[in-house]
Length: 293
Image 1 (tube, rainbow, N blue to C red):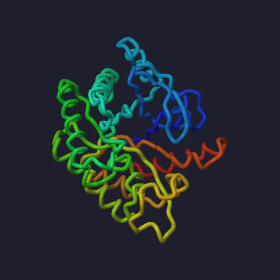
Image 2: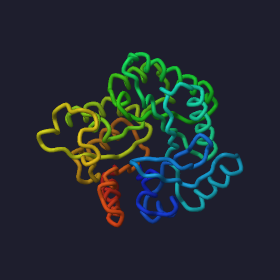
Image 3: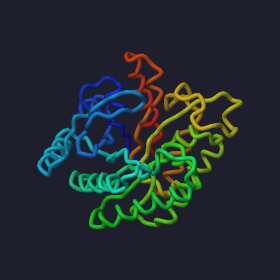
Image 4: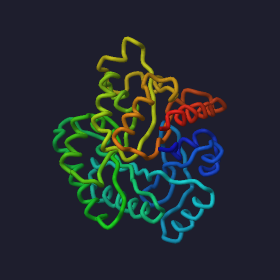
């Protein structure tokens, strides 16, 4: 395993450029966001607007980008897209992911992180969203069957964090090229008691192809009870080394399941600090490095 970080987080820390920021932080790689036009276009996360400035929209630009990574000694651990299979135009979402898979193949990346359904309507049964996600993913896998690139669906959002929803999708797709981006904090954010979070992660460990390391902190009284999704957020966000979740326990679970990929830092507690205090993320990095098998 090795330490990585989201490109968004590097810019949130105040670095002007991702690759130099990654090198300054002393880590091996980063997760690359790719927009619909295959550029690091402006996007919003945690109410912060950033743009990585990367452009992989043509074969020549992808070649130059790969050469830049090699010369700098930095790797891209995964490509991230912010698709939503719940949108009306499913074909546009499918195309976005397919295009990202083709980019991944050309720059030497073997995982594309995807969403399932991000916006749900109360009058639509959950089973419909399962079928929608399964149909979209199967079509993507069909169109990219000649590529050595896997899809890694993140436990993300409301329906996307339900363990039953995730299980149904994985079982119905049943492909070696379909797995998970394990976000270590999102099941806890969703409201599962801490003890159940570990149980859920253990059950999905063999499907993990990519990670987002996150942590949260609740009062003792709220840790092991079922809570409403997003309770106390974002004030409940915590540095990786201070939250309730034992990341060492999770890393060990992944190791036992045969995972040997990235441990990608996504510390969403940074928004609770002043800009000049955010380089405390270096403590996160030290903590994650101490967990490496």
